Length: 274
Length: 299
Image 1 (cartoon, each protein chain N blue to C red):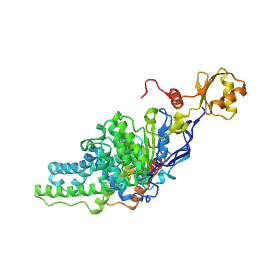
Image 2: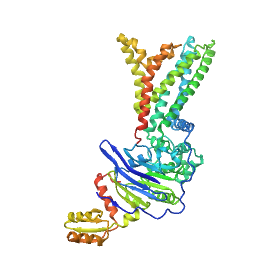
Image 3: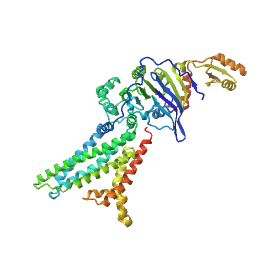
Image 4: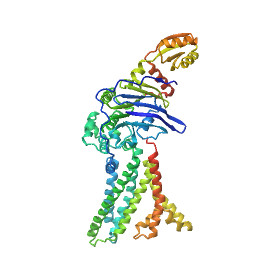
């Protein structure tokens, strides 16, 4: 079709033009991005209750331990593991939703127009997710302390503190790794429901498959610590890690966490936001 | 000022945007017009860095959007009013924009007032908003950073007549104060009332652009002949721009006198020769729309 053209020249700009001599805006600092991302985790009803559920479940798990555990089991370790289980489930979901909300809810259209450097938005989300995990674990550990004091007072026994600082730190690390796995799946899959399903496949189905393989195939049993990230992580829950176990955690972590995250971020930076 | 230069976006083998070049000037409202699926939204997404172009550039005051340090303060963007987390309140959506841009908190209330969302409405969740309310919220988000340019994709969708009138006055005032406005629509009449300049796009290519006055008024000459192909060849050969005018007619960008001389020189008898009606743009737009129209999908 032949183009219909018309004169693009028009009279001089009308009066009252605000010229381009306003000062150039300063770049958006990372702290502000992190603050906004933190706000986004709490500002919907579902987000708020997800966060609240960490504290609620910690309290419920503590109460259940006080009520149901036999006297001999009223130790800090019982409380730590009772509280640890819901945390291990919720923290990764928080990380997943923080990322996938931008796509599933199409909120990214606004987010990435206000902040075109998507890498910084993703980094802010990672930062805030880890911070939330650490704070929730400190809160949960505190709830466990109260539970242990209360439980032993109710039973009239001395409180048993059988979790060392090292062990507690390792449990923290394991939970942060779990959260980062959720974050990785969020970045790679970018859709809420499939990413949550993938997390349960990753954290529940995969270890079972590896476990069966190790049970039936002798050659795999020796290999498993070097290829199974979940298996390498379970060592974090047993007192002290050997140097070899740390290396195994590092090797499997690179394969199952670092590389997929790098791939996911690379895709996020290049993909089209619709 | 927004400048788009030789912008092309190819999906697989499909050229969604094909060598698009135009400028939206400061102090003017530029209407970006085209039927559904013509490439308007893709062009706008490329402009704001959401979609990487296959080739070409889009700049705002000479800089790529993604190079702007705090884009919300320079370009207000509304691409899809429904693309908001449904669980947030309207006020919260604005607060997030205000915090991201580092603006004072009072801007949120100022914007709510500007777009006539009441305090009660602002506390409702976006999922309970009508499309018109979402558009108002989107306009508020676009304007909160007091930007110098606006990029709005179909902002009048879902607004009632009073809302359309309000939007028109708002954009007019904004442009009169020196702002650059680029807004898209698939409805000619909607854009006709507010735009100073028009850019018409069809099937990814620009088919017309210029001032509204020039495009709507000087539609050139309408000429009709039996040997319409010979006439077209002769006119094109004389360096004139020719478009099909329907039923053996041609629309020529020239005076009647020039067209008559060319026809005489070519020996083509004419049936009709007159100044064309001012409706050249509308006819062209209808033709474009007809090519891509989907039955029953007319908005």
